[in-house]
Image (cartoon, protein in one colour):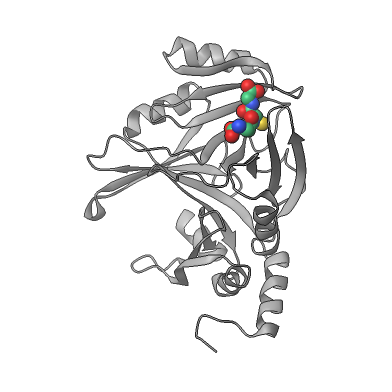
Amino acid sequence: MASTETAPHDVETALQFAKNDKRRMLHVVYRVGDLDKTIDFYTECLGMKLLRKRDIPEEKYTNAFLGYGPEDTNFVVELTYNYGVEKYDIGTGFGHFGIAVEDVQKVVDKVKSKGGKVTREPGPVKGGKSIIAFVEDHDGYKFELIQRPPTPEPLCQVMLRVGDLDRAVQFYEKAFGMKEFRRRDNPDQKYTLAMVGYGDDEYTTTVLELTYNYGVKEYTKGTGYGQIAVGTNDVYETAKALRACGGKITREPGPLPGINTKITACLDPDGWKSVFVDNADFAKELE
Ligand SMILES: N[C@@H](CCC(=O)N[C@@H](CS)C(=O)NCC(=O)O)C(=O)O
């Protein structure tokens, strides 16, 4: 057997592990051209808090973490600023981040008052009842504002477009141990979406919103969007499950040089990247 293959009983164990593992979506990583401008926009207009910042001069980049609650309980954004890089291609595959807000109009007014870009005015979503609006940050990342009652996790969606919805959902269920919370076909708008994630429902946790546009099989990835990070109790078992389900391991499981946090990374069937991070190592990083 080739070294990258896993014996069948090991596959079963790994898939079982994926189902019962302690998993949570930790953060989403993407690149921005001006860290200060982005931090101002997210804190002043979107109501996020700046949680921490770290500069890695040897590697010529700075990270900023922002969100609506602490990193040990909430999903957050991890912005990366690469020294001197001011522009990124967002690509066609990345959709948006969803933010639950109590009053969409109020946030839109705030965005406008700060000179921000509103790409879709508040109103019911086409083909549905939820009140939504879209705003865009300086790099062109879209945020869907969704009117909802208060929630412990306002940063509630990462929307990615996929070429085959069943294939994508099966992968996230089996390899990631996620649940499909909801699927909605919208024939008038010619798309179907599925919400997948951890926890009890899509209203108290962050979900991946996988969107299939009828007939569209391929998207570009661009250079801006990076990946989501997911916590796990065992990156080695995780990598086995990912591989067994057709995920492409782009980083073999093991400790990162220098910081010793154990991770593994993979691409899903559409080429979207995810990184799994050891829960105990991640908790130590936050200390
Ligand atoms: N073709 C759309 C399909 C997804 C979609 O339409 N999503 C809804 C939100 S769930 C939306 O953006 N609606 C726009 C509107 O209601 O104006 C895409 O790829 O972004």
